[in-house]
Amino acid sequence: MCLGTPARVVAVDPGDNVATVDDRGRLRRASTLRIERVAVGDWVLLAAGNVIRRLDPADAADLAARLVAAEAAATAPPTPAPRHQGDLS
Image (tube, rainbow, N blue to C red):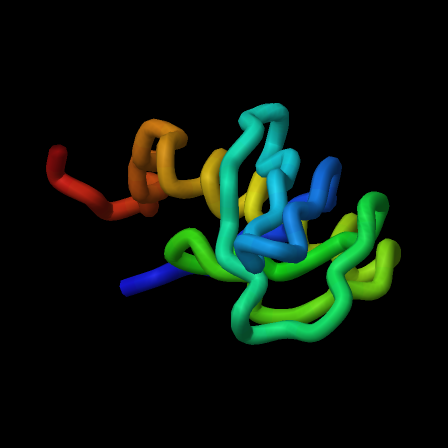
């Protein structure tokens, strides 16, 4: 499964159809073949090394917050089931 993440464009090389993006503090090179005219400062959806589409800054922030929450939930220790009266244990 491929999960898209929001990233901010920090540099563009239009001759090679490649952008450098900031993906949660990591700089990555990503193909821009699927989208026209990417500019420095744009928020984009990044998936498998490809810029899929532009994102509105508010949507990018919302998606980033949801991904952080999902990651925290996935790595949290399991919550024990509540004990009910009448349990024999």
